[in-house]
Length: 201
Image: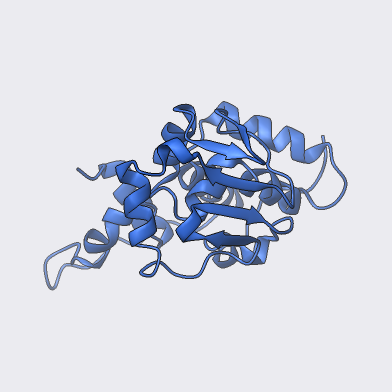
């Protein structure tokens, strides 16, 4: 079942927020001859709100979680948008999703909560765990025969190449974060220029 809110946001952003939305995005949205309603003038507030909604939907975060990540990124040196990308992409649930071990961020979070993954050989059940460059994320041996991971290994050839900051070994169900992600390397973020202010408060 596809959520109407996710479908509306996917059409608004022009990207597929969930794998099942491909058919819906390509389907004709209105009868032939019916024109699309023209939206009002784009404002900076509307653009920022749209980009914030995209971030929340892509990483399946609540408002409070995103605010906490923004505060952490604002306390570090450099552009806040770059630091924000680091914090979001180095979350354990985001890396499990990017590596192809889960179909969505939400599924990755559930699998992590059920103690299915290790980081450098240590069990981690916190989806917000911040993975450092050089650390290895792997599926526990006791869980590798479970259906989600068997499907992930079989479908590895059909998936596209992983992001440049991830070295994935599908047969062994493990992935290594090689370096801190850059904004232009993240699959969805590279097509969207985020308008979050870089001014620290």
